[in-house]
Amino acid sequence: MTGRKIGRKITGIFLMILTAIALISPANALVCVTMSNGSEWNDAKIKVDEAAYFTFRVYNSSADGRLCEDGTYEINVELIDSDYKIDEIFNWSIDSPSFDMKNGENKQVLLTLTPKELGAHTIKVTTKLIPKGSGGTQMVYTTSAKINAAVSLEGDKSFNEIPFWKVRKDCPNGLVVKEGEECPKLCENGAKAYESKGEECPEDSEKNNTVFLGAGNSETIFWGGLGGAIATIAILALVAYKRKQEAQMIDGTYNVEQ
Image (cartoon, rainbow, N blue to C red):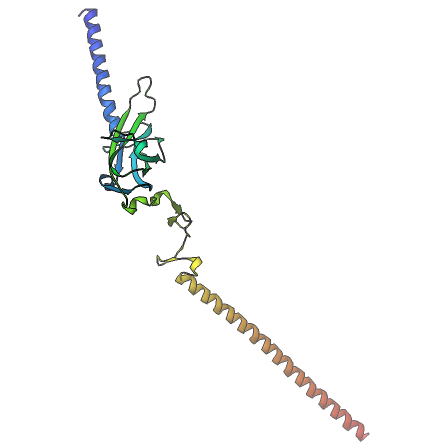
């Protein structure tokens, strides 16, 4: 085999390897950029001039357990099947327009849409993955979901409530409440007691009663002891007084005899 043929063969093998890498890499990346969203995205009835909230989650993980590369994720929002741009129809914002994730991580994202006018609109939300260290030739992978929004004068009020996960507060005892709400005490029986309402757990009531009874017993013992001491002193004083009288009487009789 001549050197030229060997060179061609090596070049062919090299090209096959590059082609395989090019085919495998996107496949790996595609399974590492996924989104999940609620069923309400298919039929979102929202009110004009009021903020509507949509939650979705982005994953840097593979369903078949493959290792996912670290990457930067970017969120893009646009109108489709429309002659207008989204900024003309909606005021909108994303709480995390860009973020990094490592293998196996996921992130919850909040999209806020405030419609400016009535009508039916389709909003496309696209998550773009840019793997770290992709070098000079930057590979970009995307996945997307659609919101079919029907804007009316009434709408569905459930879209106007800020999602709980966005305004949650973790209490010291592990309970979770909304920001601004009081953290209740968790009773042994699973019930919740709110101090501001004067509530207490059954076990606290028992402890308070025990303390009260204990204090009452101590008081009784104290007064009982004091009474006994006073009585003893009185008896001793009486005995001493009687002895003194007897001594005086004897002494008087003696003097009379003399």
